[in-house]
Amino acid sequence: MDRSLRNVLVVSFGFLLLFTAYGGLQNLQSSLYSEEGLGVTALSTLYGGMLLSSMFLPPLLIERLGCKGTIILSMCGYVAFSVGNFFASWYTLIPTSILLGLGAAPLWSAQSTYLTIVGNMHAKKAGKRGKDVVNQYFGIFFLVFQSSGVWGNLISSLVFGQTPSQEALPEEQLMSCGASDCLMATATTNSTQRPSQQLVYTLLGIYTGSGVLAVLTIAAFLKPIQDVQRESEGEKKSPPFWSTLLSTFKLYRDKRLCLLILLPLYSGLQQGFLSSEYTRSYVTCALGIQFVGYVMICFSATNALCSVLYGKVSQYTGRVVLYVLGAVTHLSCMIALLLWRPGADQLAVFFVFSGLWGVADAVWQTQNNALYGVLFEKSKEAAFANYRLWEALGFVIAFGYSTFLCVRVKLYILLGVLSLSVVAYGLVECVESKNPIRPHTPGQANQAEDKEIQTKM
Image 1 (spheres, one colour):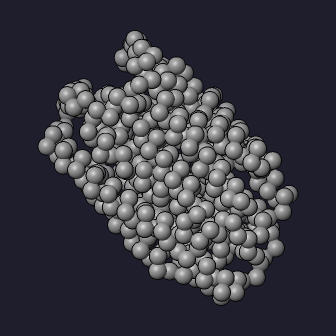
Image 2: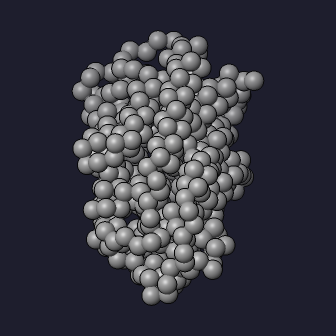
Image 3: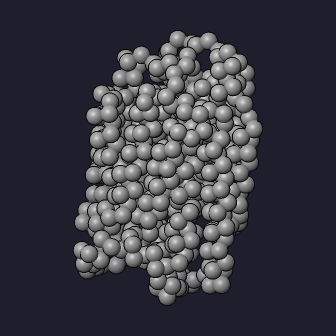
């Protein structure tokens, strides 16, 4: 197996193990800890910490610890959050949420930086275009990574499936589900009955073990990026401390980045909506918490399959076609969710919505990361830090207004941000179309791209 592909697979399976635990926990926070909005408050705090860390930590940690060291350290914060859930209260969930949030931005920035560097190096050796190889690597990563939702949610469904079945809600209570739900985070109905503490501890034990195994996998098998770079580039002088610290903000001199900030913002908003509002106001409200895992498995499975598919077809269709597909799919889902009144007799519909949401989310996850990696190849760490900053802000907003806005209003907000994001992205593509990237001759891959990016920066 090619060494670059091996490293991509190690990163992918490390994230698979880590987010098997975290993804399952995130989807259950709003349903498990609905009293006084503790669950969504913890998630909002988590992404608030991620927002703050995005401003400073990623470039610094990647510079000081390297991509591998940054990934390992950041993963430990996720494990701490799993442990904090064993003693769920305001005094445990909030501090561990902050710890996880501080590590989340460096984790994702290091992962994106690692894949971009490895992809461009492999393209240079093979005489291919850098953006094509980077797209493929992100597709492989998200195929493996998104499947974590399948395993994490399957585990939670099997564990909580031992909860005694609950009676169907009366018609008058079903009318408060879906888009009509307002402040349901503070209300308790027979559909949101909490599983026994023994089942919760069993689930948390499995999740914590998965997180620990993720840390050990990266520590044992991932090759440090410094070693990969030295094989072909030799040693490079480290930039000054303050230059690294401020690089996240300096990148705003590039107008393309200013136009693209709405893409990660929308990505955070729509993911926050799915993991809090859809799981609570639609699935848990109408079906019960034991169905959350199964419905989210459908989302994760379609997301994973579409991720690897988009990575392959993007070199033929171009990224614009995929962005249009994602925008149209999400737009259709939001309009339908505004009109639909969920009920227990419409079980298949819950899976259709989560599946279509995964089809669109795969576009934002694969293409957004690849787009940032291609457009800002010379400032990868700062670019991905900016990406995570705005995505984290989207999560903070989504979870922040979760307890005091009706679901209908949140859907209208998503529709507005999606529309603005598409327009801004279209402007960036218009700018890029005036500077087309031509194929390179073998042995000279990426040179034209590097010169073009240097000129723009």
